[in-house]
Image (cartoon, rainbow, N blue to C red; front, top):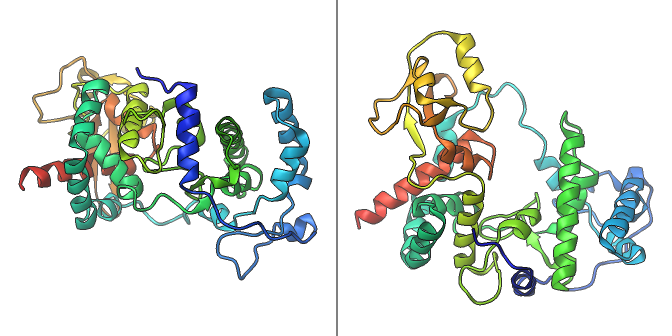
Length: 368
């Protein structure tokens, strides 16, 4: 597999950041108590500037770790965090949906598999056909999967995010909403914050220059900082990695990511399934096996089967349920390739939207 070399990462990120540098100096913060700092300003829809993160105990611990583990200068990090803004909207968006509303696959799918995205996808595929073909040859990832994923993530670069990544990551790392997974999620975002600071230092660019989603994801493929460091590649061969302004780098990086997360070339992704048993306990057991293909098709076929003739008895598969509100649940038999997509986003709905959008775009392109 092609791994990004440190020199490529540094020069590429320099270009990426140079294209998104923010303008103007930060306004001076007013000194307020922690309680006030954590209260959302009712006139602000995105950010608070009156939060003194550098005074928070957890941030002080984080700074000490960055000094000890990675050789950062303590005073410079304190100055950096004194300029970080609290992003209340990011915090709110991380709260789980209200309970009681049933999941609906058809409604979810309609948000992504729709005329505008399909037309944009055909144009994207036509424009970057050579890069998509090359990614498939090099990594084994079908063009329609790469196209579908970038289409779902950012509508082919139209919506890559306007949040300062350092603000969003710091907010979520130290002020994640009160949920059952709060501790785990805060640690995740602290790790991503660490990766963000390392990227900024290695590229010698202002850390506040990175722009992205409310969760800190960057560029056409919405890579988190840790994924940039591990999986981003210079696919256009210009000596730089640029996920913000190089669709070709985005294509190669998505392909590399999926290849590294278990994609098996030449294997189908899903097969439509029909339940053969009303054994609810057996169904719950199969559906609770996690994001992996845990059974052979022969083992699973006692509970669910597919009319497809392409499934070998020993093929490793899992069962996916797509709930449709009050309508009947759809069931699909999924291979390792489906679960590779769920490593990008753990939602079954997300993975199926990527698959369906890519398939529909391919069909639309073939009919032109």
